[in-house]
Length: 451
Image (tube, rainbow, N blue to C red; front, side):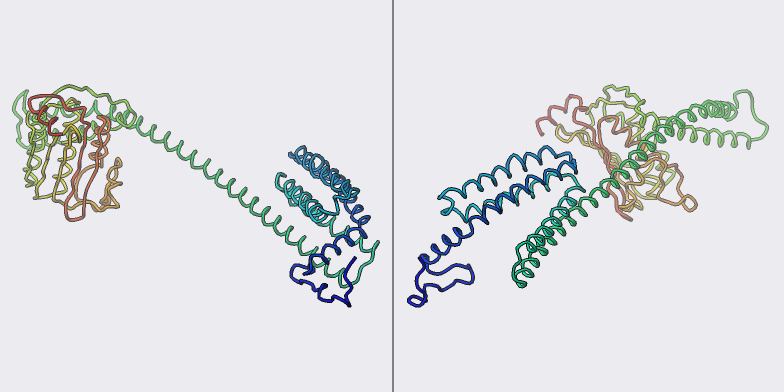
């Protein structure tokens, strides 16, 4: 029995924050009497809630989502049985001791069930599902109020919170659906761009292969008549079949011979570059002293340096060092690099330095004090036929094959080629060959011990 308010009015003091009587005894009696007076309504709510939750399985069958079977398990196999068990406990005395926990469990289980089913549904059904449930709950509440009228202020307050919670849920579902659809569009756009890039890449590979095949074919076609031109011009230049009546014919023959030889050298570079790019250029490797390589390069490039008033210096600490490589191609690498350096260092100096170490491998550097290369152009000059100078304004000859060809031949030997340059300060090209190409000799043991 509740305490008499006239005798103990302080016992009915209410905590408005937690909506509890401050006196525990009063709170206990209040809860007991309230539950006993409304037990039939509680049972009705439990039974109606369980039935409605089960009937919503019809909506699952209508939607027929891919996760329908899992949804039915959640609804009919988990939530509905728990609600029904809670309904059955209302007929036992223990329910009056756990009434708050039982009601909270019913709300929690039913709410989590809806959240779980909404989460596993594939869009767009999850958002539609939330709309249907929200609309049904709001409508059901209006019908319940018509059947069991309540004060207008309570009706308005309840509707406010019900509609607010429904609106928050729908907005959350809307934003989730919008994000999913935007992500879907973004994914499709990326996939379409990837297809275009892949197709462009395949087309570029095909075009590069066709270019290499064309260059190889044209090089073969041009070499035959050029060899004839060079051969016949040399016969005329040397006057093998008798003296010419005019010396100017000899000079012309020399010009024809030199021009033909120059053109043949360019065509040979194009042919070898095409072979290197297509993987058809094979190495003819052998052991030879590094000094032979430098001597041959000095003989080939000496007259070019002299005619351009460029000082050409060679430095090699290991003169008796032997390497295992394709001598002809290594000579071609160095000749291309030295010729390039001479071309862009007029009346300057070009230094060729060779060092070898069992840790760093063979390092060959070609340095000049010429005009240098801007950092943004270094990548360009490594591409075939690229020229930093404009075609109408450049004053230096060449077709842009020297560096790309040298790079391809270096990589064919398993090495690397890099450029270090600065405008107006000169350029250094460094060729690094693997240490495995160093052949043991008189100084090899000293190199190995030093490493």
